[in-house]
Length: 207
Image (cartoon, rainbow, N blue to C red; front, side, top):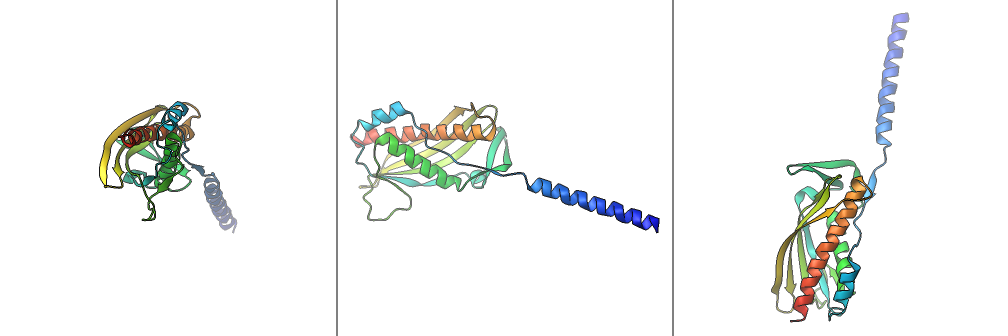
């Protein structure tokens, strides 16, 4: 009888340990991140002096590489190995986040508030349409962030391509460290991409 009670006690203890461990693992909080607008103020002043403040700019569609189409944030271990964070996630769609931040940046750089996101109403008189494809957008926590993207800018009135380009941007990760530092550097890299696109629109709008 004592033996049965002993085994029952051991079994109950093991079950308690497993349940406690499971609860402990589940209580670790998930951290959520978002990209933010980041443009160089001197570039903004320079571009605002042009005739771009009345342009209507359409942003999108924006396409991101398949490995980025998920909620978990991706970091780079080396050229051929990536890691998906367990408790660090985007607060929403990365694709939508990029489109929104790009529109904020372009608006600040060109000095126009007439920015619309794809899909827009057919009756809106778009001057330039920007389509974007993100090929790579990740980083190493102790190194830098890499953004590789290609874009096409179309003049809407005659559907002509005024610019088609591809760029690779690297941004150092400073502070804060870890995933927060990566996301901050990604925002800065997206700001530099926005400046390239805005500069192209400025040049062609003066032709």
